[in-house]
Amino acid sequence: MDDSKFKAGGVTTNIVELSSLNASKISNISVHTGLAEVTRICKAQLKGGDNKVVLSGLSNDMVHESLRCVPNPSSERLLT
Image (cartoon, rainbow, N blue to C red):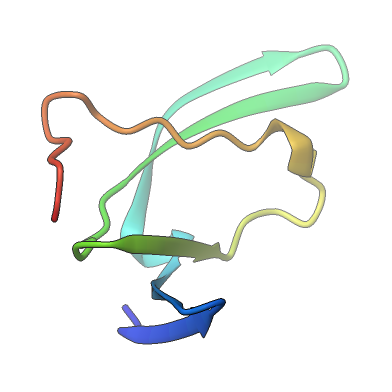
């Protein structure tokens, strides 16, 4: 995990870089005609303020517009 920062327009954003091979696990696969849906669970250590999570190692064939990030309500915390 990288712990770098990026500053744009006076706002500092914490950059969290993760590898899908090491930082996530596949929890479900659904196969449809011509495509498949893969659900992964990934945990990231976020800091207070703005965070950008970069997840590398995903398939080059994925439909990028289909990517969704859904926080787990039971572990979601408001960081200030």
